[in-house]
Length: 148
Image (cartoon, helix red, strand yellow):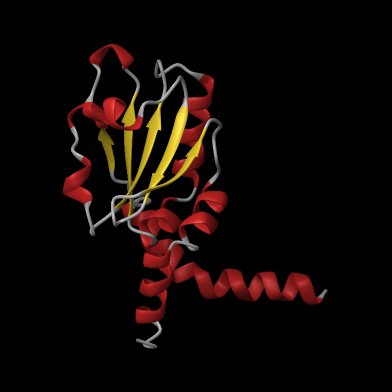
């Protein structure tokens, strides 16, 4: 009974915020086609997540994009921007720099350093936990709490 009451109270408290989001729609995740994107434009501003695949029909690519769209607010809180590259024939700068083989997910921090490479889709929870361990993210959290 206590669990149900807690859920009802949590739902009522969250309702005004949820109602505003419903009227405007969910926020959009910043998404860029990687073939014409330079990583340096995000330096110290955003954390790029680069999703590579050999075709947009790759089941892993579709699953990854579904995962990313499932919790956009969590990614936006962490200043994430998503770059996609599904055309290996184009030989984009991202492909030359990061050298993917088939499907690959790459997490890049605000400092421009590649922090993780994954050959399989990751959900937002796993991505968020990894980002939250980055030193730059730890500093952002401390600054937000007023401890620095």
